[in-house]
Length: 144
Image (cartoon, rainbow, N blue to C red; front, side):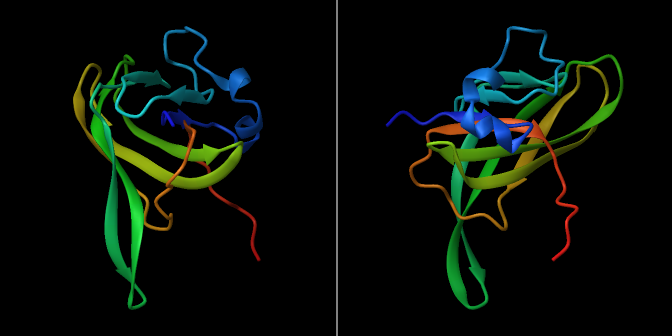
């Protein structure tokens, strides 16, 4: 199965990815955008270069070994102001969320590039995903 990466701005897009895809704009939108792992994409005035990668990382949690996803790559600030990157990558299969990783990069000047990292510390490495969506970072504000 061909694996793709999609960045989702809202989880509702998981059920209708066609409505959330890249519309050919200048990449300054915060709308979710579907991307392919390792392929360049633009989102919210940032450009992620070809060659970004998804890696399985073995971690020890509560005396158990778990495998979590980690995404790394190079990102460029294509806007005209200094700012930091903060977004999520949501991995899904058949419209159901499998894993979400939070991505960040320090403040960058316009046209500056640097490394970004998305540690999936609380996610399990997805095995059979069919989409990865890039979206705005969202906090769960509900309490249990």
